[in-house]
Amino acid sequence: MRTIIKNIKQLLMVETAPRPRVCGAEMAKIATVDNAYLVVDDDRFVSWGVMDNYQGTADREIDATGRMVMPAFCDSHTHMVYAGSREIEYTDKIRGLSYEEIARRGGGILNSAKRVQEASEQQLFDDAMLRLHEMAAHGTGAVEIKSGYGMTVDAELKMLRVIRRLREQSPLTIRATLLGAHGIPLEYRGRQEQFVDLVIEQMIPRAADEGLADFIDVFCDQGFFTVADTERMLEAGARYGLRPKIHANEMALSGGIQVAVRYNALSCDHLEFTGPAEIECLKGSATMPTVLPGAAFFLNMRQAPVRQMMDAGLPVAIASDYNPGSSPNGNMQLILSMACVTYRMLPEEAINATTINTAYAMGVSDRLGSIARGKEANFIITKPIPTYEYLPYAYGENKVEQLYIAGKRLV
Image (tube, rainbow, N blue to C red; front, side, top):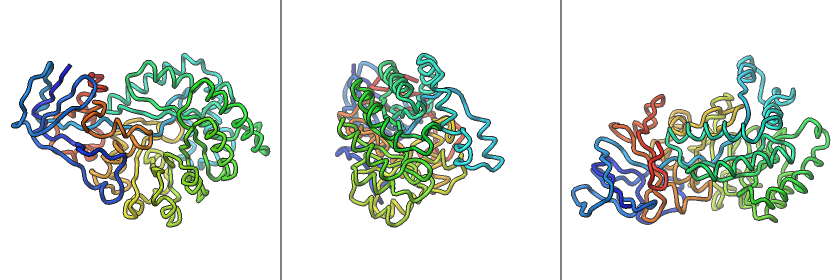
């Protein structure tokens, strides 16, 4: 079926020569067409241009007068399969307890792990599907979901099976990541290497045997897993075809960024502690630096040096880190606003960071993240808004009127 979206006030993120990612100064530019049309054949973009030049017929017409059209958001870092909330820990944070202090007394990841272990697969699935609907309502069309709240072999596999069910039953594009090394279970404190052995010898092979994961992730940071631990697990994952995506440098200069580059990680995420050596290391690499404003905001942490990264010519992706402990929100419109308010990114930079660059960080920028001929027709039609700068400006308002996934209206 051929669809034309006509009378578009402004069409954003069009590409005649699609790029896998956008770097450095180029992040401050997005290609737009005023008074535009967009043609979709079945599930693919096929053409666009100025409305006055349109000639042709369509099976369906959508009038977008006064509205913007742009690619759907891609959210390349979430933990949105979980059981229960952690608002009591939120109050502890207000009282002054640090993330590490809460973790040491059994809170944090350990709290979520206990709940996941006790929850049924159906409960986890039902709760996660509701979260996916909420994310889609705010314009997200693709999402990466990590395990990591299981911390036992069976519970990690349970989480990954839930993610597989979500992928099968949701129209959103979903990528799955095995994050067996998200934290150290209490029973392995003081013998951390034995838990690493468990991840290598049981979690990774079993997840790979069932085809449950696209990527492997490790929390390489102070108080969590060392560089040596991380290298062992990434090497084990590589033997099963799992490409790395690393949690790095949230708590300290951990060496995680260097490990990410050394092992050709698709992305390294968090990056609050990033200095000149880390930026230099990322230059010329295939690793996408990914910043998570929601977590830094919620935990009141230092900010990743986004401007220095872009000034050095690096790409930057911005994702939600949707999780119950440090970023309980999957609204990518809010994350877009945080990128501008907190990191002083220009609207154009933030739009690139939440679409094409997050698509790259999920390994799907060849088919998502921009409007290009042959790419999948995942796109947003906004409510009537004055300019695209209004997207981050009106941070409390849902600007999405319609969301289309593979050419079909979802919202």
